[in-house]
Length: 353
Image (cartoon, rainbow, N blue to C red; front, side):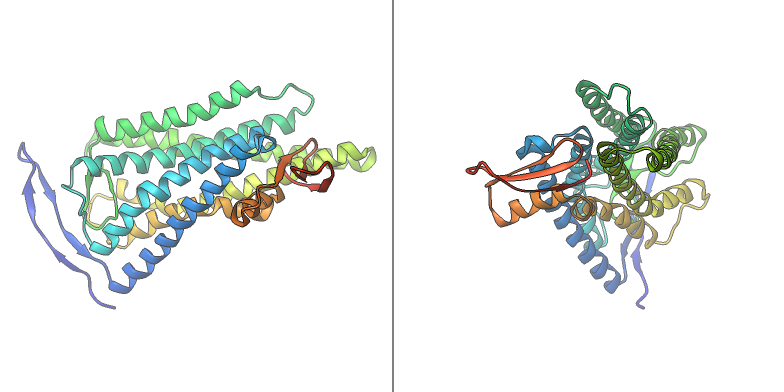
């Protein structure tokens, strides 16, 4: 393995502050392989999430409450693929930040978008779990109204914007740090900055994860209890409803599990760089941590394709350019696909909703 080349230059930033501007050149094969993986992921994130949005927008029957939350996720993932990952790929190849100064406008925008997309994603997952928890544990109660669903969707974006804006203008400033593939907040060095990082970590990681864990635990308990009751006294309609709720819950749990797996290296890296007194780290930690997080943006559309026949048929319609179908999550989770110019139904089958 070739050694890492680096040149050092300490420049004054005004007020006597100095910034370490080491220019790292990662191992050639490491840079090429990771850049290729991220390039493929960026392409899949843009194309896949665009198709998710197209399917939901194009077919009225796909605009279920759960699918509206998935639109939130798709928009966040699309932003990552189109507006965040290209910066990381270029920086990885060049070995340094080439989009202006280390504290310039593009650097600030990049740092803001990184935080914005991550927070929007995890809070959307949190609201999805709250919505499904209520619908499964209170099956006879009134469901969330559309305006409440839209309110939760908006809340995810508003808090993401607040967190990101505080990051770039509040207690911490954004800059490009040596050995990284993106701009981000300064490493905490004083009590004030440690308090700020603790607030961000608690509100955007620990609280959502606690809520997610509780909701999914309650959901699976409720599903198991319903299954036992239905074994003794069941009807076809109840059985179909339970099967649908169980399938959609498992699908959403897979989405959550994949997100946690991809985000875990990033959160471990963020925690390590926060508590480590010596702020000089291996330049390979940051690209791996952020690369794993970015790759998650390409995976959700793939999960939907495997788990949801309605989304799968929607993808086929887009790719094959056959706009003669109406795709819908019908009552009790039935996908109905019919030719627009025909009165007959082509076929019908069960999907998760």
